[in-house]
Length: 159
Image (cartoon, rainbow, N blue to C red; front, side):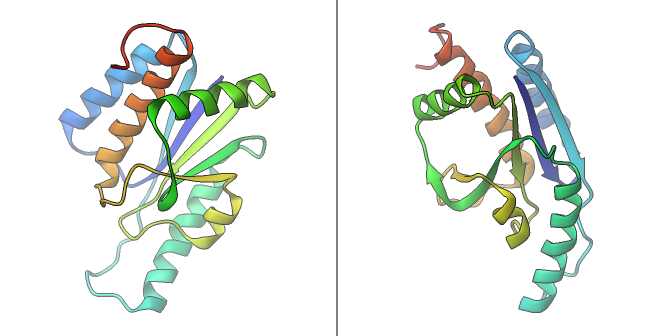
């Protein structure tokens, strides 16, 4: 299983990097994990709707160039489907069973994902209605992927 996380923006916080690195290391026995960062689009704080769309489109174009054409794409979006850890594990296991050996999770920038990325996604998943910093979301996602593999293998961890 090859899992890629494509995210907008460079991870700067050392404590987040350390947490992500730890879970990526733990995942090594279960799957190959690639973390791909694309640059965020520099923009002022106050933007019109048209300017927001331009920023999201540029970031979206960068994201789409990093997604393998064969990948099953899961876009993280506030309006996506919420799942329990057990449901996420079952869904990943189902993808593996039916020959989907490449999964790409996509985390957008601070303005979210462009419509083109959402159209490319096979599904949209939400981790809740709260807005989380995308750097923190990467840590939460990697931990949940690790948890999913532990659940699939019937190994203790997920309680």
